[in-house]
Structure formats: structure tokens, C-alpha cells
Image 1 (tube, rainbow, N blue to C red):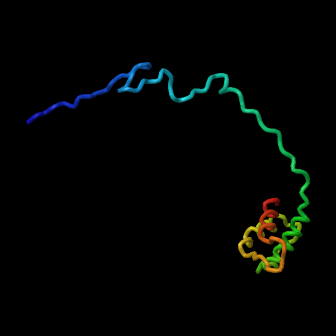
Image 2 (tube, rainbow, N blue to C red; image 1 turned 90 degrees about the vertical axis):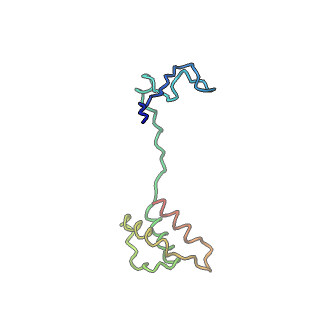
Image 3 (cartoon, rainbow, N blue to C red; image 1 turned 45 degrees about the vertical axis):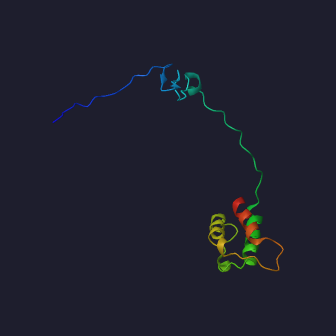
Amino acid sequence: MNLRTPTSSVRVVTAGSQIGNRPVAKTSSVMRKTAKSAGTPRSKRPPIRLGEIKTGRIVNRLRELHELGGDPAYERFPASEELFLVLEHAQTRAGKLKQPKDSLVNVVGEAAVLRAKL
């Protein structure tokens, strides 16, 4: 019976030496933050002003598009003052809208743009 103790073959490699035919880098491959860059916060962009958004007009147009698109729950469309409910109704019923054949307006596409504006 041959009882051999396992031998450990750990090779210590120093920077600048070679492993096989590849040289070992003298610096770490992980970039470290310097004390100077770690303490300074990134500069922030100035806010972009979009201007005034007339939600009443958007809601009225959205209501017209849902009527043109044949929304089955059109009679339950919320009042113009209920902005969150209008947006919720428009999002949940977006898949039910259909493009009328006699309309030159892209009902589904315009409704999607208006929902994004709200």
C-alpha cells in the first residue's frame, strides 16, 4: 500500500516575472481610486425646462382618440381634472384601441405619445 502525502505546488510569482511565456504585469489590473478622485463628487447637469404642459388639452385630445379608436369603456373615461385616473384609464385600455379605416390620424400612435407626455 502506497501512502503518499499530497504535495502542494504553489508557485509564488512576483511582478515583472513570467508565467509560461506570458509576462506578469507590474501593476494590478484593477483600477484603484486615488484619494483625490474618491473625495470629489461628479458635477451635476443643469435641469432641463420643458415649458408649460397644457394637461387639459392633452386629456381632451386623448378622450377624442379613445372615442375614435373604439374604446369599449369610453363611457367610463374619467373627468379632465382627474389626471392620474385619465392616465391609468388610457394605459389599461391602450391595447383595445383600433385604427379606424376612414381616419387619416394614427389613433394608436398619437394616443401613445400623449400618454407619454402626461
